Length: 208
Image (cartoon, rainbow, N blue to C red; front, side, top):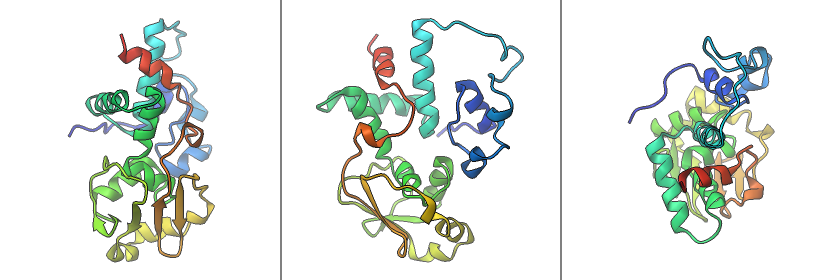
């Protein structure tokens, strides 16, 4: 599958806010958007008035970039959200939050979603005791996510495990720091999702 491989900081500058794509760096003065609060490119400093469509498109792009998802997969999630009971926009965010890579990030087992995706792809995690290396795997209530036994000696995983105590775990998850494992105790509600996404604009965009 194609994946964005350019500088992550350009995405934050394009959306005009931090997307927290580079872990701890995003919280320091090294963050690019702290130095250059304008879009990348030679016309980045020009002020542009967006149309209604442009505003909706930027909101969709921002959501995609927060979770690191390509357009085809994002549209698939939207179709899943439409078919579920409830508010479509909230359903969409719930599905995005339920991705395995995002769940691992929320548990504090990765410093960023891109890092969580890489760790999952490399087979460092299990779900209910079985290895899962698919970042888009959707977790369910009752699922137990844990660092694979053999991976606990990995310098990368061990370094992350040493800082998990400072991570605020959302209430829809439970975390066991001693065993580097977490459990999904509920599906995330809109109140549990702290991202600055106006999901109704995404629904309006796709509903045209």
